[in-house]
Length: 338
Image 1 (spheres, rainbow, N blue to C red):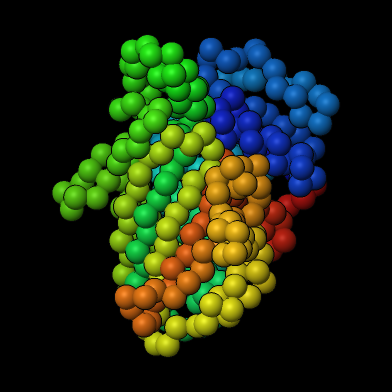
Image 2 (image 1 turned 180 degrees about the horizontal axis):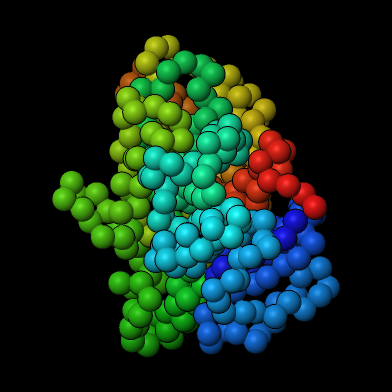
């Protein structure tokens, strides 16, 4: 396939290159796009040097799929150009996630939604992906009435510059030097704060609002009640989430939950109560699977259960999900392999 990556020099763009290679995705042509300051530089893919370009009026002609990881404004500005070129946009930004004509896809959960695409497919928010990979296996036990989730989000969600800022601030803090936040709004080293997305009129920040409404769209369930609290924590990579799931009827046993999670593609159970060993971001970093554990019945609600999950924000939360979407397009015959 003829592939393009927009935002190729960013954290997600670099992960896309690795995932395409690791999964042996059929790439016959690769074009990498970034800002003017990166033009002319090179990235290595399967032993070859690929020159980074800026986007021109005909950049997407002849491409089959373009992965976008350059922010909402770039995706919005280039949507027509991509679609008019006969190329499929797989977009990691929030630009089109809630558009009625754009599928919002986690392939393990709702790959069938790809059948209705019109040239643009959205990758969900990273926190939503990690949440639903832990929750989706439980739908076999009956209707899920309510989800309460609290996130502990790594700085990788804010990009490579935020990851560098955590490193710089940590060194400064330990050296007793002054800390000056530049990328994130507050000190992140040895601190945590409400996610840095703007707070809306309902009192939710943007990340929390995305999780609420993306969950409803992906699960095709407008009746499900969802509330979220999203916190940025001083972890380089991999988000974690404390999840409470309430069922309409009788809740499953703890063993049933563990078995359902273990059987679900893309989920790894980490649940050793004897050693108090449950999902941690250090273990999820670099892993394709979402780690789920600390499974227990909610002592305050006879219909609810509690879980803890960790997942790599740059992999399953972004790059991996995007490549899995492309693989699903091939499997369903929705894009031609040359």
